[in-house]
Amino acid sequence: MRILWHGPYKTPTGYWNQAEVWLKRLIGLGHEVAFSCLAGVTSHMETWRVEAGGRVHEVPVYPCTPYEMNGQDVVKGHYDHFKADLCITLTCTWVLNPDAWRDMRVIHVTPVDCEGMSVRDYHVVANSGGTPAAVCRWGETQMRARGLDPLYLPHGVETSVFRPPDDRGKLRQAMSLDHMFLVGINAGNHDKTRKRWNEAFGGFAAFHGKHPKSLLAVHSIAYLPGGLKLPALAAEWGISDAILFSQQYEQITGMLGAEELRAWYGALDVLLSVGNEGFGLPVMEAQACGTPVVAGNYSSGPELCASGWLVRGQYDWNDHHEKRWHIPFISDVAAKLELAYEHAGEARAAAREFALGWDADRLLEAHWKPVMDELG
Image 1 (tube, rainbow, N blue to C red):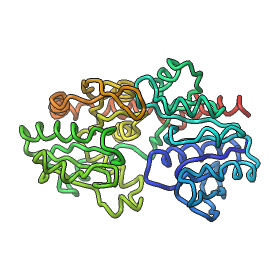
Image 2: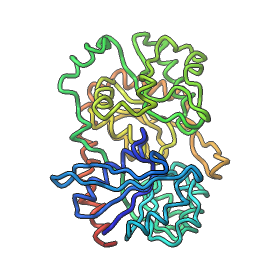
Image 3: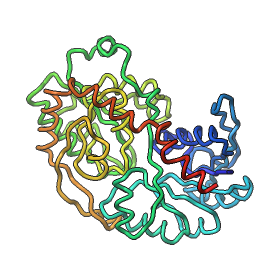
């Protein structure tokens, strides 16, 4: 089958992470693939050289244009030029225009981060003629509650890449962090509410007040238009001297690769992720590296956090998507960090063992391959 994948190309996002994970494996199954850029390459063709199935493949990369921000003015042309049998989209589905997709065979892989599924996501899926696909069982449940019949194409992690450090003590000593309790957050900062930065910072501030030998490592861009000024938020919570931001230039330009991220996860004592997640790749990547997680007891949290602690929250209205999601209780964030402080070391082996169940190769055989075989 000839598959055109539409999404952001080689950008520091989970969408590109999963594009790379699955395209390599689809090539290995014998499919021919091409990439259609939502972002990443503009106004000229490129070639992505990727090793799969024991040899190097040259994958055509079709550009977006300066005229439509999501690449939809040219995607049908890309589809026809590549002679595609199928197009797979992986992005925020709600940003798409249903009219652009009706004349193609499309699967919309759709992370669902609102309870009940965003009316905007639903509008695209229901009016584009495409088939929805869920990335976790929680998302599948939300889609079925709206009367949809989604495929199940779960996100996965390369557990051979994301794995525990060879010598964690030596790694932390090299970072001069061996005497500190290290809490990490790996999250986007593109909007002011979804990742719940304020509540995460507030919970850590309360925890840090009791445990001054603790640090918050933040793997994110500290300020983006539309997002929060994270250094100012840290100052407001009084934790400026207890926060470690990732290298900003390298973060913005995508220079921090999987090996750097693996070391970062491995050095942590616990990962904090209490946003409203359609999946939440850092939750699974951290556990693959042996690091337990504090997550929300809402959205995908209970499904993906089997080795850590779940934070309670309350409903919040998302007016943009006209559905509910959650605000974590700051006091409960602090309480769960306290439990992690006491028991994180005991949970490291269980974290790795649980993450192995989300290994991309396992999920390929169990879910992706059967779906592609049936479609082909």
